[in-house]
Length: 181
Image 1 (spheres, helix red, strand yellow):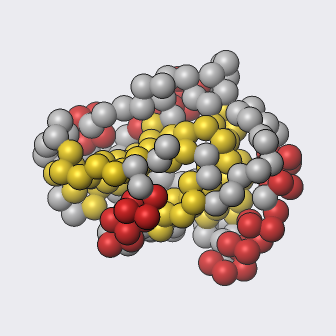
Image 2: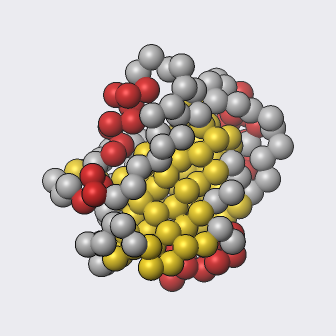
């Protein structure tokens, strides 16, 4: 089940707010300018599924987002716990960074932990199968797939180059909870 925890950015041990209700999560994130939705996932895909199969299964949803939001690049991250580079891939996303465009992820299977640093708050969002999150351009954030990843996510970007991170140099991400699956 999806979960939102909101922290004061200097108090990573004590959540100010916690919810597992999708409507409450969407409302709280919406007030912070973050899009959160839950979609149907009936394609039966599992971690490790090939990109072509994932994109074909959700072609209509992807095309609607491209048409409505102008996204230019679409790819799939599909990782299972036996992936040989899982530790390196996890590390790539763990430090706080920004993108010059929105970053959209739709979780087709599994889960991942997004943490967004907005103002003096950290919004920790456990995204699971069916969740779509859109991190607005220039929002400091980090992502944790856990030590044993098991997820499939469709990513959409406005940038034709896809995922391009601008790291902030802050160590804030190291002070907050990780996804320990």
